[in-house]
Length: 497
Image 1 (spheres, rainbow, N blue to C red):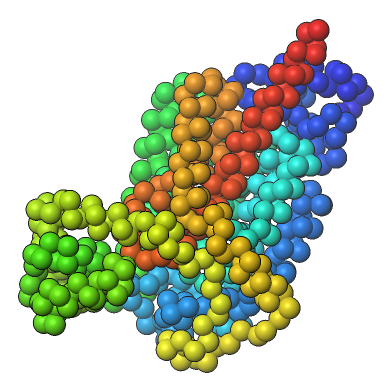
Image 2: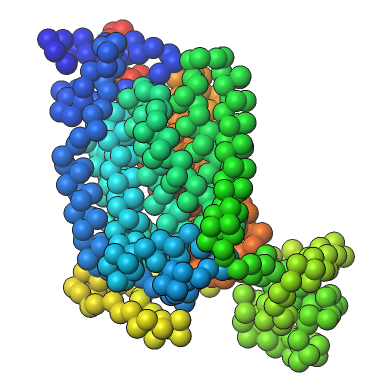
């Protein structure tokens, strides 16, 4: 910090401008921290060798452990789409196209896995660089979080939500660095962040809303200080909504105009699932023309429902529809069934939520490579390795513990979202600036969680992976804000005395 003494440095921190609440690094710790133009606050550099080393080691080790990527039936289905370059929209055509490109580059999904893991560990590294302004060397915990069982469980899984998680983590952490460095987003940020948010938003049909808080946060970084806060909030909200609508339009054009994906009317999955449950729970039949003959016998339907514990296989009581008119009829019957049987619907939805979140049974939290899957027509295999065995043993050791269950991370996310909201509403400008990046990440997880409650139908942790990771990093961030506020207060008190 030049020729300034340690006491003088602490006094400058205590006098930080109210519009920006970024505390300094630990007293005496200045490595990797460059002073801002104004000279009143430390600004982190993008290079932190210790965190970079941990992130690169994590990237390499997880690639070696998971290569060519953990594959399930869905993963092989998307791989086959890319290999044949013929797409449908039941799975993600974008992931299918990315896997097709990976096939051209490496002959397997390894190139795709390198990207997914690189975004994950790169996002963790950027978060640590920004968070370091609050907690000093303790920010290394953000990168080390990647080695924990909740993070490792699905990090290398070739699927939609793990890719969403990597994209959103990197994009939010990038913006966090811009924020702490007190910059405005420029062209490089737009070019980097918007495509990542687009990919993350479109891989699932209900994940568009989860991009809204991150988009609004990025817009806030561009407009803060230019207009009064209320006007800035309105404009940021409008920007996020407009860009999300643009994502929807662009995705439609990409899927059907460029990739020529076949429509599968995937929304019928929810229609058929809910109609089957209401048929069992009430004895009333809706969309009877689509109910398979053998399930018209109520006892047979009840036995099938119990066999599958009310989870996703019960949709097989109804036949799949293949044209828009039949889908509309099915949708009208679905809505009528819910309106006429609200208690049965809520009981069914409660059962699906309880089982999907691990409240009634253990969820599938870790997967091995499914070599014998019927969709593995290419004969892909995963080589055995010591690293793979170590991760499998780790996952098996903790798989029944509460911190591997979706209910735990969902409850923690809701609690932290409420805490962030309270701090934003009641803490003043400097607290709002400090909390905002972590609130954006937490609320993004929440906006993935809320629509999932309405469509969940299987006990699989992959659907809530971003909820888990956003809660880990958002929670760490809020803890750093609290620690920074405490340190600033203690510094002010010691100066006053």
